[in-house]
Image: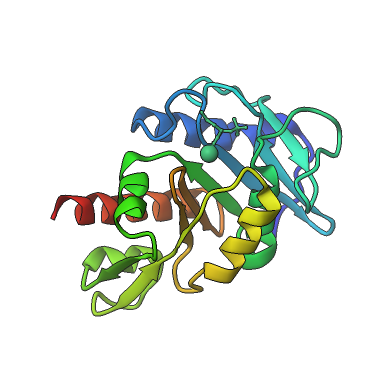
Length: 199
Ligand SMILES: CSCCC(=O)C(=O)COP(=O)(O)O
Ligand SMILES: [Zn+2]
């Protein structure tokens, strides 16, 4: 069950902390990346990071509440990708979504535009897979500035066992039950991508 949150600072504090962590890894350079957390399920509401800010400097107030289509409910300027966050939540039931611009995700999508095979790695258990003897495809979808188009591509390509999709030439979308689990999934997927890039 999702605790209903209506105070921007309450919703924004964990997102600011997560953003600072990802930014410290170099995954949100410039003003790239965005984060969201579900604050209500009925009707669906998300707190999404505001657009165009340096994500290493967010304050708890730097979030905007959006509806199930990613439109602001009380004004404000949500992330340009808010509609994709909302779509991921509607599709997967996730409670938090992470979008980071990592070099490894873009490089690996360039090498493997049809998707990235991950197999025989203990770290796959960090995505909820039962053991290391697994082979899964991390989907890669083509980029678009139209979040509806990106959402359709994500829906068509997603692998239900993998809480992540790479957007070619852009970055990584990852989700989880809450911000902490979405962070763990993000760190695991990025580790797998960096490994495959290295070997
Ligand atoms: C240089 S970042 C370009 C936009 C983008 O892809 C991104 O992740 C940040 O967009 P936002 O509107 O959330 O700041
Ligand atoms: Zn982006």
